[in-house]
Image (cartoon, rainbow over all chains, first blue to last red; front, top):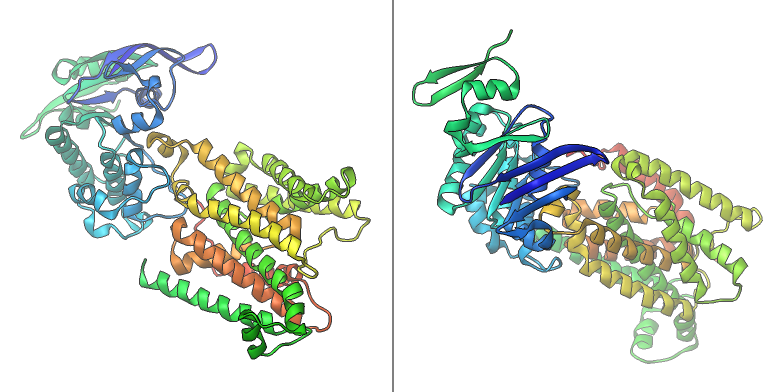
Length: 253
Length: 320
């Protein structure tokens, strides 16, 4: 997946994303990090084809993303949003089935068996007839992850997946994502606020500030105390945690 | 299908058959059950001829209209993502009725014109309703819709010299009208049943739908077209009958669940039964006169809706 000289403006004449050029390595986990308002979520929308660049191009497997039909795109790219709004209510099974829509006529009935493996892999089988609204935040997040995996995508995007989860679920989710990446050879792109989480899970890091891509590369090269202090414009200390490795702490003034 | 759903379907089918039989037998001219059976199996009598000419078309129109109104309500609740949405409350039905009246001024004597004008009226009402702000705020949609409805009813009254413009009655329904309702009704109801998976998809956000390869605009516009057909079809033959579109699908949800593939056919059957019941009661209680189904639905339906809201049955609007 490649971005070449991509601009994007919400208001004409005021580019929000400017001249973004980057390549996402296939089969790796890449985290997009940067301060609030840096344009991380907008970049994610550009990469997933949810919005069109005002200039430049986004390519997936050497094909411009806007040349793909919505259905073709949905077979290659799945997105787990930060917040998953549901109007009315639906069961876990109905929610996960939505991930199979790209492979069926939009009016056809999707068989229960078709989603069995995706429920299994996310440990949701016993909840299949429960309503999504009755589940905990962590379980709901798993439902949308199962729906995204059911799309059998090449690229899985997650926008701030841990925001509404307690630390126990955060850890479980991250382990699961890493496992998916390793076993299914899925390319994963995350937008993350927590730099330590990003450091722990990622192979590569994409740093953004003020609508620009500041750097892309392997995490060990980019995640240094100085580079992070430059990026977030704040004092950061690096410590060594046994069995974890380097850990960044923001020191309040 | 789960046991509860199956039981609900069986229950409504039994109620339908019983109510149809009662409605055929009882009236200003009552026939015996024996006469009815002999009439159905081909025998003819003076009473049966009257029933075939008067009561049968009325029952057909009532059943199909009831089904159409309930399904229009169910689909509106999906499209507007609001469980109080219903064409009769949002001014779509009264818009259709106003357009029929205006059409009669412009092109009098055009029989087929009625449904065309009704469709135009329905479209205009929906265009006025479907602003971004209205769609985003559930209560705003209802308030604007209610206001729009009052305005349309007011203009209709103005044009019909202060008397109610509503012709909402099944009294005097002819076979011609029955055929029109059958054609429009069966086409639009069939479309609704086929398109019911799309109504399920609208439970997800527009962003989510886009990422699974669905065109939100296509889904919305297609379902709105079906809603307009259903609403205008009824409005052009019998006028506006309120509340069926809210009460039936919302009670249906507690019986057969929230999957529109089950809910739409169930609403169709229940709406048909409810309207036939109401019309039959209205026809029988003050013989030889009658109370129109619209009047009974306005009073009883309104009270029932208030009860439903007070009991918190509709509390879950857009909470998640």
